[in-house]
Length: 190
Image (cartoon, rainbow, N blue to C red; front, side):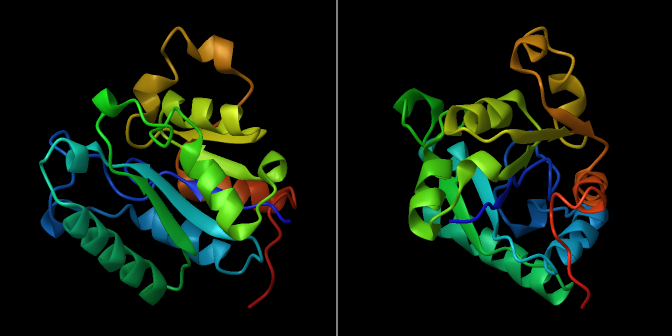
């Protein structure tokens, strides 16, 4: 078993949209995120996206549309020299009370089972306290919020103090650069 890097999608890799990412035209990729994913392509740790996509459960988009958006995003990441090994998404609305919608840890457990991941030594980078809660529930200790997406608002919520310790970074590139500089994420020369 080895650790992995878990990344939220909206607010970390692409911009959040107030009315959901409904189609490809709604996708705006953070340029710094592409740079971060390029760095991660030189790591031997698996890189996964874990994302709540309640627009599916709300009937706003289909599961097929969500998968097509993710597929196109992965192609762009790959063409930019980056790597994502798999995407785990929760298609449910909050009313479904499923175990895979963050803050529940189901997506993390699913990835760990499928890929034999050591969650305790893994990394999770999100833009919301629900990401932190999911990571804590799964036993992940290297948790981070980035200030892109909802991060700036989330870190100022009163419950933040009860969820610490976790790292706060400007963006995904800053987070990955920090972890790589501390040799917490091994990066190999290309």
